[in-house]
Image (cartoon, helix red, strand yellow):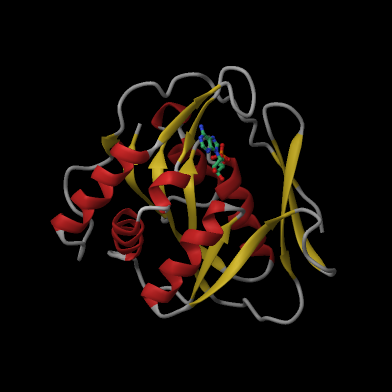
Length: 213
Ligand code: AMP
């Protein structure tokens, strides 16, 4: 099944300000030290890449942050803590796979890779959504697992326009599951991804970001 969402991306070079905490209060059940450690690692190790993957975009490369043992551990704990009860973590292609598996282990639930089109054997659920130039598609399997009634935590590294999260949530809904929370390391507030998620998934979905830029 294929569906086109109306999530036009408008990525701009508006991310040059230093990374700041999205919320000075620690998430529920997250020790202040752990959150502070995660935020310090993000501030110290995030690599900013101008004009990637297209002109005008400043890419937030969190790869070096995840390669730091202390940074990775504190980020996983901070992403998981305060999470409402869930049955499954959906890790969004590709850095969301790294984060999602570890967060699922922390929460004691399973993990499902939400993959880019063409990587999974058929049959699959497919959701196509608009990008600034062209479109992209995400897929999950339709067979081999029953997602009916599952409560899902979506995990990704960066929330930009929110189109990817909405597409992933649409896939889950097609499979009978529903997303209760979206957890990301970094939210790019200028791109209003939270509002897109509220419109596209629902106002009851919690959006949880460790830092905002
Ligand atoms: P969006 O659908 O616009 O919210 O984009 C989110 C997805 O694109 C995530 O999987 C991110 O990894 C990636 N992404 C978008 N913009 C950026 C950016 N400026 N820096 C790093 N990753 C980004």
